Image 1 (cartoon, rainbow, N blue to C red):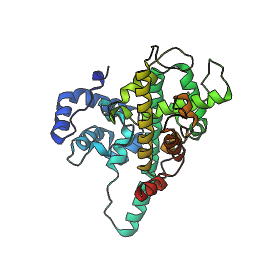
Image 2 (cartoon, helix red, strand yellow):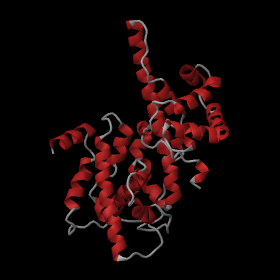
Image 3 (cartoon, rainbow, N blue to C red):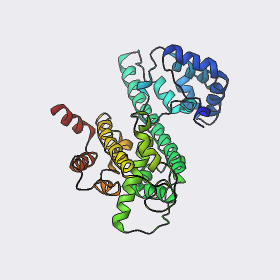
Image 4 (cartoon, one colour):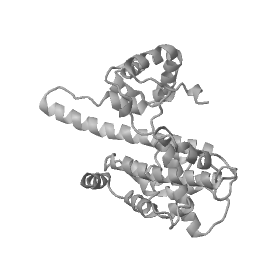
Length: 311
């Protein structure tokens, strides 16, 4: 299934050129289909015309200065990269405008506002796409808990057509106490965030978590894979969960204070109840550290950076 998405393995200049040459027909078709659904005026402002947009996007991908490390979090690293029109518009229009000072200043202000709108649209698309991904690998109740945990964020983004269908659509089949609801809402948000941030590509042991919590099982608590676990396997999963918490802490400290979407997603997991649902109990010597790092996920990224600089 993953191979069908034509993953991009070699991000060097030669590798990107070879990727285009090997898959040019499907890449051009993918871009054309995306352009058909796009706003023609926006595309024309960025690329002069829709006719030129296809070749210019390919040229941007093959440019020497294009680097994979600059891709925003959540952007797919396969053929779907070419469907991310908002990203390509933002990438194309981010250069300086050389003109008279007064005109230059106004153009740069307009460009900044346009860039912010494009960036927000990109994030909303990522949010919706990853919710679909989550739905494919968890029980239905988990989606319901995620919707409950992120209701405020979804309402703020309700103008997005891709999210409207999800708001208020979540249902919980299994009745549980309010305490359990808090735990499962944090758990659902945690699972979602691992997908949104592509954690499976960040460290090798993620599979221990994935095989338990990102596999469809029975729609009943604890909403995990249908298999028995040895004591050793449970221990390995808990180690990975603690590593993920540390990883989240580092990622949050690297983003901008104004990235409201990412900050909202982090806030939804900033609860000590998460440690209970993942069975990281009071006898675990790392519980207090994990609890502190979870609570800090509510803080501004800049303040986390300052704390790291002090230590």
